Length: 450
Image (cartoon, rainbow, N blue to C red; front, side, top):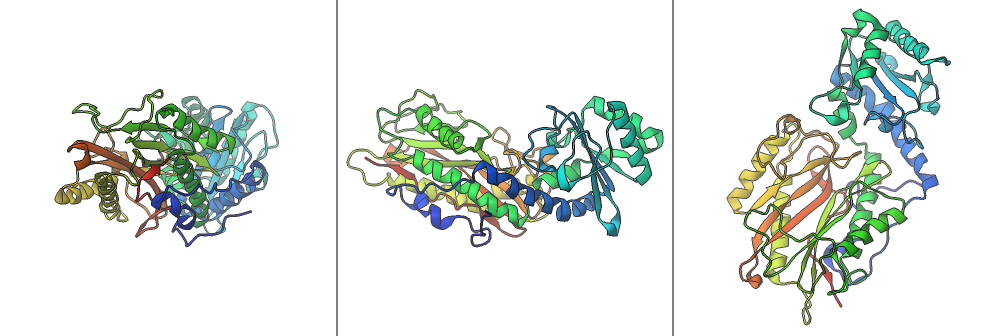
């Protein structure tokens, strides 16, 4: 099956509304596609990307040929985004060749021992490794490209997939004339990896929805018994839910707690105790950071919960106000998302707006997509609230995804003026003019009740 669009980029709001407005209702577990259905979904997306997106991006980058060469268990980071599923690694030495024929479109073929299905023509009938490299040189010379892009980059790890030894073999294979035409394809790789199709956004919504409903279940009495359950228990509940559903976590869930009277030190960048054996108590403010990958796209989500004390029916108003401040922080940050602005420019503009309204904050927002920490404009880092050279200089493009990540620090009257930190992160999509949260965003604390 394929997921139907839900209000075009609006997110799974109806399904998840309970998670952001109330914790009194048992979560609805969102369906996860069985393994056997996933390749067809992903391959439809890969084919559309190769047919419609790649030609435009190659021309944008000024490349008429792009080579992606990888060896088994030493994959180029971009390799799996280009080939049909199910596939887990390159086989032996796998060579993908893309050549722009202008009006005739981008030709794509492979010079490899093993075929790659209907998406790629085969340009080699077999032989030893020397014969394979010889054939690659032949097909390149036949096409006589002006600029040959290869995946080498000092700035972007995801665009630095061609190993030193493979680069040397390529230079030998094409000869001295054509080797002078070899250039870095880093701009193409970043644009390929960061750009999403509308079809992908529909799938992405489900992935983010699964992450959010799992957090809501974790921050409820289904999982937490005050005085018994540990931080580590909650983290492993989330991880187990993902593993049992065949969802790939891209990091182990982080869970931590703040409470009235806690002293985390004046210089602590993050407030909270994340020791796995730390026991959750009534009156705790909980935080989790969760990331999963599903159908080729990753999520990154941080949300907050509160464990009600005996006799309480709601969290202290100061904590609710702090959550509202966090939402205001999100709005002021995303208001600065303008096509063409660099990550560093967005950071500076947002910081100026936040300073005007007196919100104590930190911004460490990053691109999101095929990888959790994806290529694209970096907008602050937790340990650097100034410009990030290189990655922060990349401009904002339409049809790209981001983890809107950071924190606000707010004094809580009910805690005697002690500060609490709302550490928030939501997966979002920029369509060129507006930032859309892919499955809504948290606007109220999750409540752990009796």
